[in-house]
Length: 136
Image 1 (cartoon, one colour):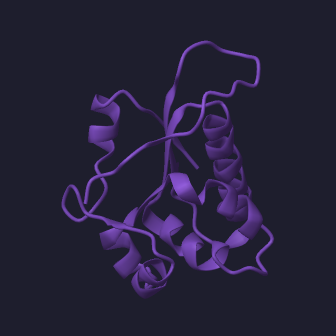
Image 2 (cartoon, one colour; image 1 turned 180 degrees about the vertical axis):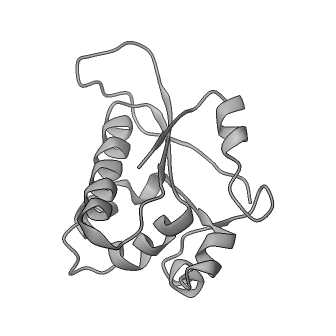
Image 3 (tube, helix red, strand yellow; image 1 turned 45 degrees about the vertical axis):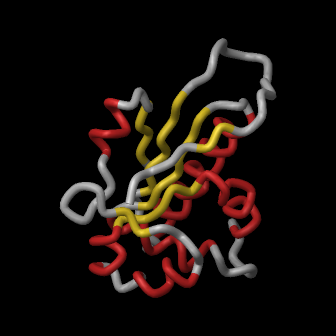
């Protein structure tokens, strides 16, 4: 499956010029306080790109695939933050979702499983397509 970007509106928050292309990649797992801090920052960063009218993709890779099960839960602290950027979620790594036992959760959530390069999303393609890749 190929990643697709979302460009939302043309609003500006008053800084920077032009349109950026950002790929926000969640790698942090759900264990520990650092993981929740990293996913919260990833969601905020994706929202900033989106609200600025930039092209943005949000994807979950490695242990980060576990977050989908957590974030789709309406009772989760960051569920609302996730829903605000759900439309820019390109997907989750197919291989890692299986390895971390969350493949069924990802599919139930309606999130695409990405398998562009050896069953993983292609970070190289994002770079060659001009995206700045930010990992959390």
